[in-house]
Image (cartoon, rainbow, N blue to C red; front, side):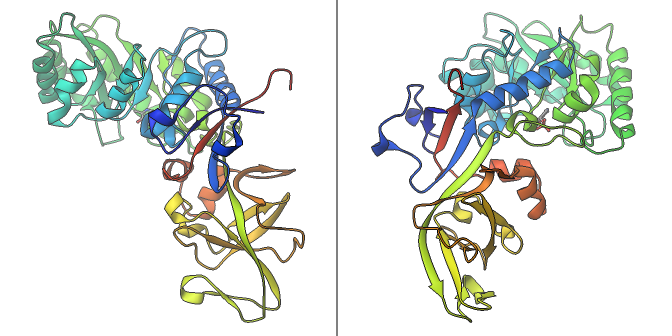
Length: 402
Ligand SMILES: *Cc1c(COP(=O)(O)O)cnc(C)c1O
């Protein structure tokens, strides 16, 4: 595998598409995140196969592409397998959209959260396509776009049960005409909704949301000319084929997180840290704040150069494991901000400088991001988006022919 680029923290200036070969600039000295761009593209291809051949993909790259680094991910997905470009990229904030524009991306950018009142003019200036959830938002956007040469496209969100955003699905006959009245400076391009339970085994709640969406769209038929329709997150894409609509908006699945039962993404993210200290300790020795762990006999401990300040959840202590030399060993005591202690008693050969894998493959063993999330009582999304800015991102491509 070749390292194609590295991104220290999330700063764009540190991102380069040229190969990193100088060992003195290696980001793999302390702790780092590896991102398999080839697997990312395979997951995107699987998402595209799950929807109809004519449907478009809107990869969700909000929150720095779920912590992986937005610009390198956008670069990797700019041309999807099969040669097609994504219909758009999806973000959550105006700033994220501006960052995409500054990187030179001039395709569609969809912004999927209600926009704060003071950001409409920036959204219009960057020609972002924002999702609107109320009549007042339509007016604000129309005012912000008034000076633009071309009508600014927007999408309307319909609330079918998610509750956090969107016009109420039952009242489309009421708000629809108010939205349509703003045409001129604006162009009504799309209508969408968002699922709350598509990743859970029962499919009925999702089907009910689609019924509601259909009813709302039917009520809007005379007001908007063939809008693009979209409903599916990763689970809606992989488990329901995007319901045959025009676009799908996968996020977590692209990045290697499961999107409900029977979805099998290729792993994309690995989290690794060096062992920086190895000690043989006496029975009764204690590890970590609160001295919650006590050696039962003579033990060999290792200190990893990574902690909760890097995004390793404290909740991973007490059951969490890491891979060293292809074997699984336990985390002991509490996780500190910058360090984590592991029990290396079963691996006598372990040494300072060894790499420990907290997420990812090592030999034949593997820890999935979903395993870590489950161990911590959370979801893969939270584990990934909290990976710290202190961790360099290392982007890997399968080498030609390997
Ligand atoms: C984040 C988001 C998605 C992607 O959801 P995943 O579960 O990560 O696939 C899709 N649509 C909207 C509106 C979102 O906010």
